Amino acid sequence: MKRQILYSPLSAKATKIMLLGAGELGKEVIIEAMRLGFFTIAVDRYEGAPGQQVAHRSYTGSLKDAAFLRSLIEKEKPDYIVPEIEAINLDMLFDLEKEGFNIIPNAKATYTAMQRERIRELIVKTGVPVSEYYYASSLKELKAACKKAGFPCWVKAIQDSSGAGSSKVKSPLDIEKAYERAQVHARGSAEKLIVEKNIDFDLEVTELVVRYFVNGSPRFAGEAGSLAASCLLRVIWFGQMSAAPDRMIPAWLLLPRISWVFPKPACMSGPSPVCLSPPLKGWVLMWCRF
Image (cartoon, rainbow, N blue to C red; front, side, top):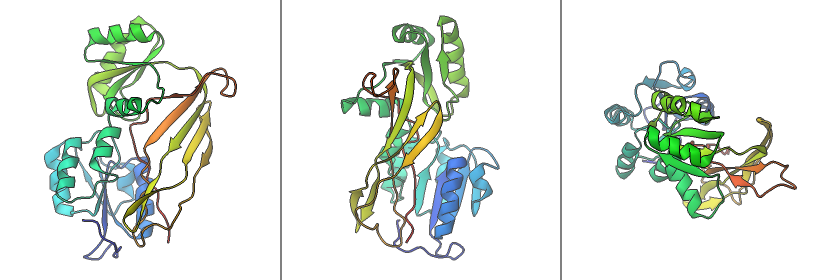
């Protein structure tokens, strides 16, 4: 259960945070958590992951293995559980949350943001314009979907990370290779694929919605985000909080993330912006210092 006091990380009452996935992003979260006084636990699918190199304690195993996850969590009893990668047994998160464990941001948000179809359809329901897309569950369906989207287009595994199961399909000759890549290299699930129409753009703007808590009530900070052009990050900005977060517990800035692109010609004179398929990692974690 969540506690309102941070105890010494090496004491019997240590306040524990467990990261499910310990890549470069997880490593930075762990370092900051250690500065604040958390006992940090890094779990990843391979030994020596970046976050494991700096955490107080680490474990290695398949994060899609429900029995493995449960055994670790019941052993460590972490105060906070942070899913950091997409290749996780997402159904287990709901069970853990019902049992009183704190999933950051929560099981539903993680379940939605870690899978391309769920996050895409959620955005579509809001009326936000998105790039043209189709789904496919077989090679035959994929060929038809690519034909509808036109060439070039993008083929992506429905649940993946770091583009491992994604391919740019330039012509019909590339479809089978894209299908095989998704099936072999997707880090989550490739039982379904999403085909996205290619958008040639000059500028990408990522907006972040920041939620934190004051006296147990949710608040929303000013906008935060980044601006990129030519694949290079140019600008990062952050809004301000309207009040100080709950004392002694870091403010979790849990950020559903949307990337907008401005199709060519340049955004000032070109068409309206389009929402790209959001990055699957649907949160960013920051800390408030007191």
